Image (cartoon, rainbow, N blue to C red; front, side, top):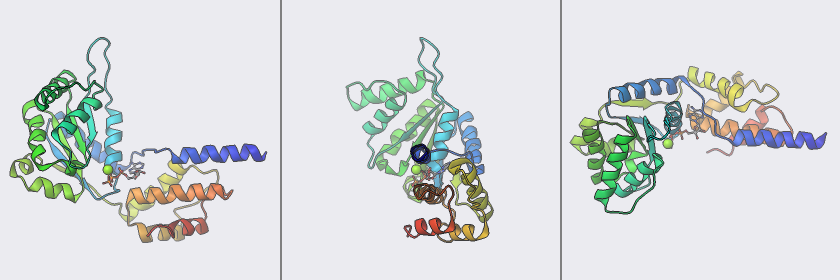
Length: 264
Ligand SMILES: Nc1ncnc2c1ncn2[C@@H]1O[C@H](COP(=O)(O)OP(=O)(O)OP(=O)(O)O)[C@@H](O)[C@H]1O
Ligand SMILES: [Mg+2]
């Protein structure tokens, strides 16, 4: 009996540790905006503070537009997403694009690499290229990014925080191309309550209801977290795991207070 319970708890903890994406209203609006940019082949930017769900929103868009493998022919890849490293060079950017398209990297000069990327983007009929953490791209590489839009007619979308805005605005030719934008915001109080309810029902899925939308718990959650979905997720996920490890099947106020005390 005890063994079964322990195993179940471990499985539950593993489940909670696995990232899950929820189709929130804001994510749906983001997807509609991305559809519009992709279909009209227009570039743009997605802006939002850290932990507002930009990367998750893009990942779920990519999942909705997966590559289509038609046998014997190059795959059709409507959407490509790359996450660039700090001080990203042109070589790194092109390499990431080739990897995202699941092709082999070949040796050669930067010109060869660019040529290969253009060829692959064309062959795979890529409609949209999303560059996450785009403020990490070296300033002079923005010319390469612009060319992908100008020469290949691909909707290039740059994603980042206010830092990205500052980088884009420094160069008029970049700024004027990436004028269209989508803002990922923090949750207002109504959305906050709805999101807590969704998390309890769809993500935490504990055996016993915790009633996380009751006034005292909501007040506590709201106090520190001010609607950042990523922070809310961290706290609720950790609280659920702590509760399970204590042998509780729900999150009580005491456990939540304990977990929240660990967050600044
Ligand atoms: N739609 C969602 N469904 C489930 N979890 C989400 C969702 N959006 C955000 N999260 C949670 O919030 C965390 C932060 O989200 P994400 O990484 O997308 O933020 P971000 O805006 O890209 O932040 P940063 O600017 O720091 O990269 C995720 O790791 C995930 O746990
Ligand atoms: Mg991110």
